[in-house]
Length: 491
Ligand SMILES: Cc1cc2nc3c(=O)[nH]c(=O)nc-3n(C[C@H](O)[C@H](O)[C@H](O)COP(=O)(O)OP(=O)(O)OC[C@H]3O[C@@H](n4cnc5c(N)ncnc54)[C@H](O)[C@@H]3O)c2cc1C
Ligand code: SF4
Image (cartoon, rainbow, N blue to C red; front, side, top):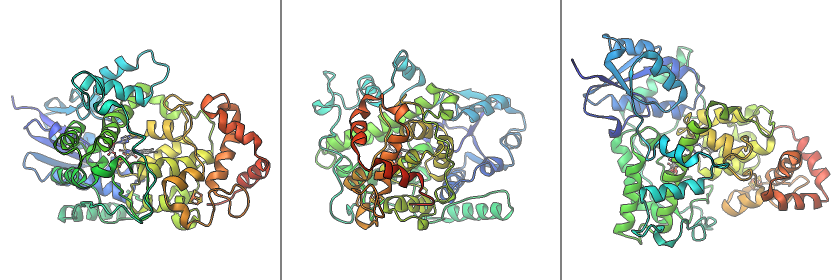
């Protein structure tokens, strides 16, 4: 009997998913047609698959549906096909329905079983607790006596500095060069749009993220060599003139499965051991926290919380995101931070995590946008958006729609925070310290309006005791509520 054919999903493109046999990738036109995604995202997925299919053991099948593609790839029937456990609920249901052999999942450092042991019986699943537990279990950045490397679990006191006064950090960033496979992918997308069954949004620009193994390794090496040094200090700061700052730009190759998170962590830790000046512990720990902490944590929460989690709406937020937000029409917006965030989303399908959390999600939270709509928006508009990554980040962290299952308080913030951690306010017609009037910052006013509107749901949260105390002393609260509730159109 011939060995099984390995069916690869588009997020299983790296060596961790290749055991040396024959493989097939199925491009399902229906899967592309189902969502109105960003052009840059459609290009990344299609180009990544076309690139992978240039390997002699990988075949590409284009079909209307996965079922039809599978029938073409395996005329002997699905019994001759195996697949590594896919990463979303619909895909897991599909492969079971199609009757292919399902191998245990790969692509993460920790297993669902390990997470379940940690999570069972806890009333709150806090990232910090989980991250420390994984560090202990894996020994990553731990001393032989079981202490965290450097004597501390985190280096926030040294990290998270405001941005420098300079217009950019001036750090080198490697970008991939578009090639003929990208051109082929673009041509296909254009043809599908012309045929009328594919609708895309956002602007098509140069491809900024790795879609092959070779490119992914180049991106990893570039980050370690040029930006890891400043990753810690500036991990939460952003500058209008520097979209990369000291970030890794590895979410796309990680989410495509081109890099395994374990190898990324090993490479960064090795860089630190080899040269602690070029790769200081502050940045290395900050980065390990992102990949071993946050990424694994949101992955597990997707499964742990179950399918209903994405339907939560604890703050009864019922506003549909307006067209200017949905279409990322930045030119309609005066508020410099939001204009910048929407422009970046429209032009790249990517933004800095502070822009995602403290501008885009913060705005949606303050304005009461419907969590499910916002969640879907992030999945479609971001090149690294996946079904599993978004619910914890958006429903939980960004919008507090889960009522605090993963965050101890909503990530709502006014202009003061943005003025400290970004330079957007310098070029804004609003002032971050003004609450009422023509120069009132819509984020500052929006913050108090959010607290006021949600007092019944949030006033009992002990972490909000001080903000509520301050709010009740605001003499202009009634005017502010009038102003914000009457706001029509973009700020
Ligand atoms: C509202 C919101 C939406 C987000 N949407 C996505 C998304 O669609 N896809 C996505 O991969 N990440 C998402 N994130 C997490 C994070 O913003 C991106 O992973 C990061 O900005 C990607 O840039 P980078 O690779 O340079 O990250 P770095 O800052 O260099 O971090 C290194 C890596 O850590 C991982 N990571 C860090 N934080 C998270 C997190 N909260 N969740 C999952 N992985 C994390 C990513 O793989 C990232 O590449 C979101 C965060 C928020 C707050
Ligand atoms: S003043 Fe307010 S709206 Fe303008 S950039 Fe700053 S935070 Fe954003």
